[in-house]
Image (cartoon, rainbow, N blue to C red):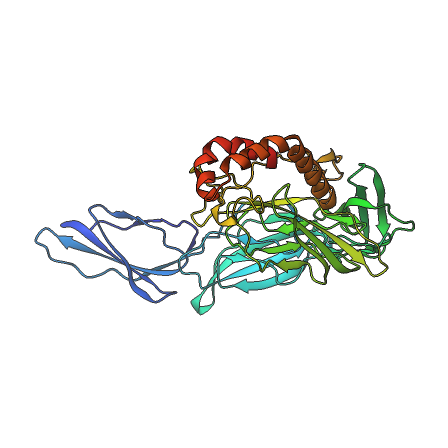
Length: 471
């Protein structure tokens, strides 16, 4: 007969003179023979392992005290039809292709899967097989309520018992298509993917700079929406959602998508530290941009080192090696076909690490880590970065944006031109205030071998020179 236990108990009648019994089992479904052998001193045998599923042929024989084995019993056949157990499943599935799994059973060569659409009155939505103990639909399941079962299949047409049912419903979310990037368009078209089973859509748009909700529209018949008035320049976040009147519930909100009206880009590379002295500089492409302007300062408060005004791609490969142990600052902005210039990106500082991975040279001593043209040869410079004043960026915390409880913080820093101008003003003022002292130092070290004298005097003049040429 059929049984569902994985470790059943076999019983038989006693044989006079028997001191033990031998048990022989063949798996008739897989053909494995013997599948299992065991011994018992009584008239029963408890299987020590799971049998899996399939048809089992069993024989038992007695062994006497003299060691003589008596003939085998007649064949006894039973079938193990144990049902698999579906793994825990969230009743609300936010994907149209959920992943289902269940426990494996020895003897199963494949699995029979049945999915009914309860929203459509229980009609069969899927009937398929899987060679492994998991499955995901190959096409999107429409928004609806469903019920799933699974059972084991084996050789020779064997079919096990159906698992207990699992109910779930598909409340999938759209995927944003556009806008995904900064744009110069003040009325960008918002597009997202269609959701199977949706009868309408909604969109939520927020100005993350002010926290104001620009729109919260539902009942859209298509997966697109365009604002009827110009959007002010600034940063925004948007979400879309699908609704199903047939299923009687809303789907799930799409992921939060941010973009900037006015073309302001975001630097994506390099990170805070790079090992290459010729790093690749990258930023987000801007919709409507025909070129980009890149500005890189030689140190955080240093003079302009790189200034490219006609880049047509959103990256720039540095070719002249940068100094190791130094920190650089970069900005990017975009220019549209009409000549509109975006705001500068947020600043990105990055440090070129030493070959051993250290960010600074901590050996100390030596000459000041700045070049004074005509006075200290570049070859004598320390490889340490300048002592730097960190800019304090201004900005405001952006409001938490519904429908997701998230917050983004926008930060703004000085423009590259402002930083360079500020650095020159500070350096000029400092140099003028200390000019008399410096002239005294230069006079003290002048002579036929001024460089040797300067090296001997460096310990005493280091602080003075750093005060004059560093912040």
